[in-house]
View 1 (tube, rainbow, N blue to C red):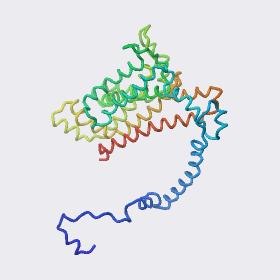
View 2 (cartoon, rainbow, N blue to C red; view 1 turned 180 degrees about the vertical axis):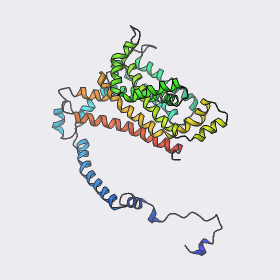
View 3 (spheres, rainbow, N blue to C red; view 1 turned 60 degrees about the horizontal axis):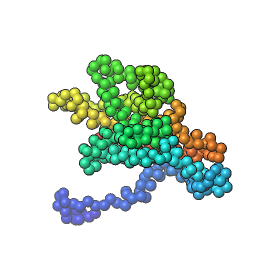
View 4 (cartoon, helix red, strand yellow; view 1 turned 90 degrees about the vertical axis):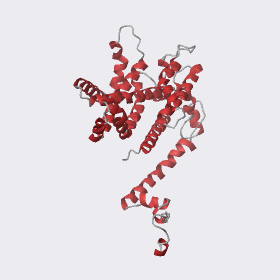
Length: 371
């Protein structure tokens, strides 16, 4: 640029010029990120070669050479040499609803729609009438329980042992996620409390949960928990599972949040004290908002791990989406199609966990957790 052109503008009024083409655009991104060095170039070429060998064969097996109709494995083999998706299509209702009565499945669908409505004001702060919507969110667990179990308001009673498939995974996952966060916050604050008894109880609980596998806790829920309630008490197995899964996730959640609390500078606590705020006021207004913002990646990671662990209910005889798939393979007409079952289940969990991960990134970007 000529000095005369620069001098044509007054100080502070010079327009913003576009960046040179050599430092922006797709070609610049590819050159910088994929071929920026010898090692980077070798890794890029190796990745392209592996994708070239894997993706075409995968696409052929999953889509091009797949059979989408049929009543048995032999029908699929007669049509194509790839995947037999007819097996998944035939049993799709079983994968979604488990053994829930067919005539009452509208209640499951309605509960799922209401779940989206209940989650909207929690996940997004620009929802219209958010205050009233949050009241519905608080009441949603009770509404969902009435809809799914029934027995009142003219709804037919459905025993919880008929819950299964995808709906069982969602019930356990959403319940654990919803209740483990507030319990985890209380445990994290209790562990840092100056009250010895409270601190010891919280530390003992967290260390016990971290030292015991979830499978063991599920066995305790299925076999031993009924011994701790008064004789004759009918303690539903699903409720016992929900309690154990929630407590298990709460222990890990407490440690994640404690990490966020320890990242808060001491000056923030001193600033709260200097303003005359009491303990709960300083926690609610100053400390916890910052700690939770810092702990978002760890919190979402715990949620994702909990959601995937819902498949462990199969060890106590409850058939989630994975259990339904494995039991369906016992049918002599469909034997030998385990690959299709595991691919279907993997795709379902990948989509669910990917959406949670994307929302975490959205939340981090919105709250500017980088500073």
